[in-house]
Image 1 (cartoon, rainbow, N blue to C red):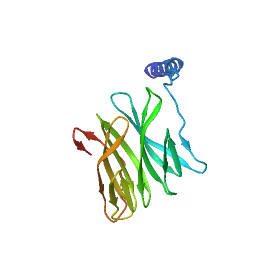
Image 2: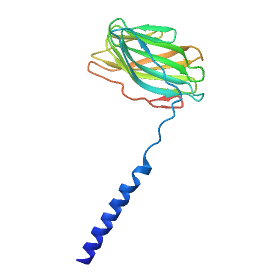
Image 3: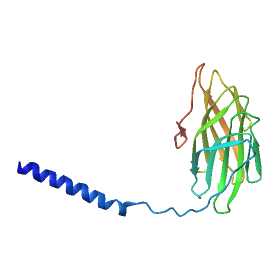
Length: 184
């Protein structure tokens, strides 16, 4: 009986110490480096889906939009169907350096973004056709996945290649990993 009594006291003390530790373990308020507004026209929507940074601190963002989307001096139009964008933001100058659309005849969605050096990789999925730079890919079925490699040229982005995968069913590119020259 004594052992059970001591176990109950030890448990109560441990629980009490955990409660006392709570106030000291609260997170500190973040120190915002910068925040910015992204412009969409009335009736337009935009969703930021994935973010990555390069070694110089530049931020690459990719997302989906419907309607028009303005990033700095670049305005992208979706043509009334869900489309994808990729853009580069410079925190040092607080400006959008470039923005590229992923155009399509159906819908396109982005899932993941990876940056290795000046190489930018983008993964997502689409229906019908999708054009990334000058590369047009056709879907073999309901939706297919795509992976594209772009080169960040500082103030512009250029598409190196784009590939699709899929069959007659529903294929969704949801993740992306890059190791050296291998893309998974």
